[in-house]
Image (tube, rainbow, N blue to C red; front, side):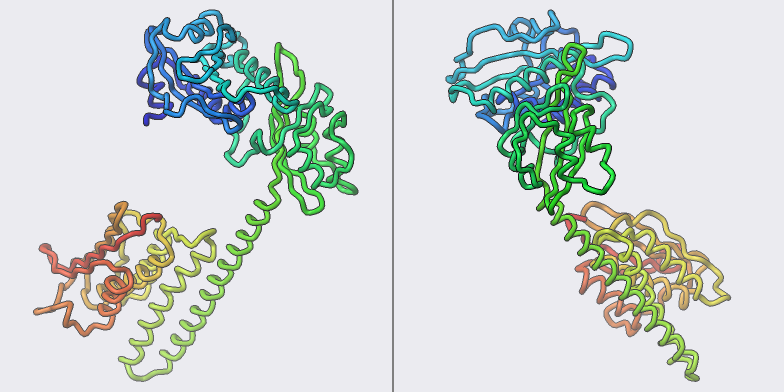
Length: 490
């Protein structure tokens, strides 16, 4: 299905500022759909204004839908949808007409012109919202439904006047409160004129024993949440409905999220809506995850410290040995332990079990260059980016890279040594090549007795289920290719 941006770019004359306004509207118009108990379809004028194209659609969560199929991308000619034409031509909300029975159920149609606020001007009309209400389950409305409908009417008027969405405000996040979570309606002075049952329950959990209706919400909330501490200014602004903002309040172990929507109709503020959501359990889980992440990072930090201690002990033991072969074996072990420690050090700073492997690879490459023989005198170079890798892949790749670089520097005597990275969505392809002495005559990977190559093969083929090839380069030297499958989530 084409996106809103695609449809606007291909079929309309709207500019980037218009598109941003429509994105802001669509990101928050679930509120209007739920308060209206109605489906919303956003129609934009086609190029040349000879018709309309549906560029966005929203179904209500508070009532039955009219449109079970997607309407986005549909085109309507001028005259085909009279209410849309009227709202656009006369720049007003249209509610005329009897219910439409063409779909088999009674549907009340309304249209709302969408105006974008322009500084110093009257604004610019961009599109028309078609609001369709399924009347099949119509009954005598309750106080809650009447409050919802009145609030929806006020929001619709704000859309037509260019006052909703709120210009310059941060986009509303998915986790923000919804209409069904709890709703308060405030008057101009910030007093509660209606409290939904869910909203009242949330305040009961905060410790309220009196009724909310008639109370000044800012003062009541501050009394519940603050005693000797200074009052949070954001709380007072949100709870009084003076600005389109969000905040959280906590009392007695309960955490409640508040979102204010000022109602500004006809140039003046007539009140506000405050959406309320009890997020106690959500925040508890977030805190548990943060504690778990911190514990995991601390474990990685301690593992890194222990590995560095092991490396230091091995290095100390190597200095005391008189047999060159034994000393060299311990020094290789030090490098292997060091490469694992680098991965754990990186993980100790990462919020999740993923590693920015470019940083790890650069440290492994630097470590290999620093410990190479002075007569070699080269520093390996990385070409390309590894990106972010899961830790289960990062550790074996770091060890394999350490072995290949050390092997090339110690036995190949190269003048150039490069690590070329070519990742795809499915695989990580790494080539380590040098221009050194090349492979020994009759070299065969299957029968090679080199401990380093055996380690690399075990890591790549056994642990990572990848492929390892070692071949001579046509220009001289050796080329080693690792091809490692990546999990779909990485």
